[in-house]
Length: 512
Image 1 (cartoon, helix red, strand yellow):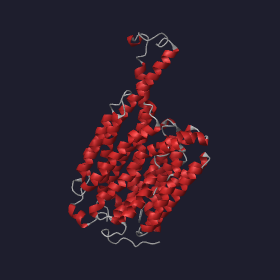
Image 2 (cartoon, helix red, strand yellow; image 1 turned 120 degrees about the horizontal axis):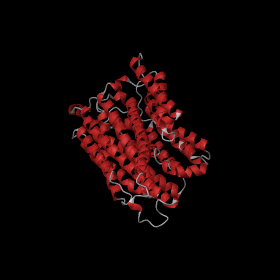
Image 3 (spheres, helix red, strand yellow; image 1 turned 90 degrees about the vertical axis):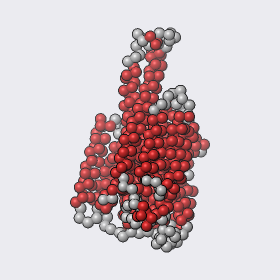
Image 4 (cartoon, one colour; image 1 turned 45 degrees about the horizontal axis):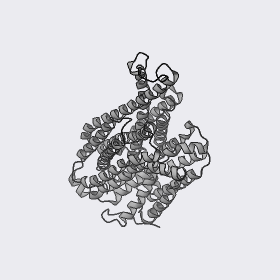
């Protein structure tokens, strides 16, 4: 079943059906970045795995996806974007089914590796397709739809994963992808036109260097906290290996004769480079917050998994509302002003989170989550539009994977940083607060006998309270640091070059 290539973005048949089909595939992949997290304890018991072993269910997917992602552009040039899309959806759906039927840790880790390999191309390809099938005046709305899919997926993932795990079985976290993948596959086969840019020689050295660098970096970030960071030889070797690989890649990209794996033309486009940088920051703040909140709500506040998902869902609602609004503003308002508003709202939400207490209700989480969702929506849509505003159409198949890759790496960096700061901050606060636990402290004078500092039971109770308060202080400090990072980023928006309105209206180098 073949579909004629796109020649005029103003007259694309079945644009709506194409959008639905590719966004189903995108949301399916985006959900899987977080939906399995809440099911890990159930999977651990079912597969008889240790705490350290079960984390490979997450790590294997992330590492495989990161390594396969940069290869997307070359595969599209070699086999055609439609074929790559079809194979990716089939492979991802089949791997999801294999995850669901796995009965051993090795089996599910292998299936998750396949999921990561086949799913890597879905997000950047969907972005490239939406840029191609929409005329310049509709690019903002198209990026709003795409952004809603990839942002709302990870936000709603824990809630959906928790509900499926509690009411059905952890295996349905993966089985749910099968019908979604089938619908997406039908729509892609039926409506998606082909697109095949000129094929070039694969720069194998560049690909290997980039793959090694990304793979080792992801392992370093994912396993650093478990292995106590640089106290572990594993972490030292992974960090050194990543640095060496990226150094080789940088030198190779600059000096190689002919085409390099990372197209040098991408690095000459200031908007694309700055867009990737801000995408990294957005990923770091968004995924860092998403990693902290479930731990806080379930660990300190004692909320059940499903309720945690419910009170964090307003963030996704805020994102969707903002993206609908911003999609209509992109062509009318300076993109930098919209992004500054988004970063400001995100910083405000994070500042609100510094007022968390152990006695509060869920109101603060809901309100701050909604505000942060609006901020992310105001940031992500114009950021995507600005990053590709001046990029030549022939570079999209190479540019969209790099853009997605840096956003994902930003997420991994953010998660690792906030978890490391949380652990270290809790230990430091515990040490400070413990100095007040002494027989001479008048605050303990009125405690009942057996519950003061003069008994083992009393000391154990007080230590539990100190640990709880120290952990709360560590969360507050994490949110304060992320708010500061977000605020500091705002002045850097001035380096983004707004696209010329004449170029936008005429098409120019804007995405067609």
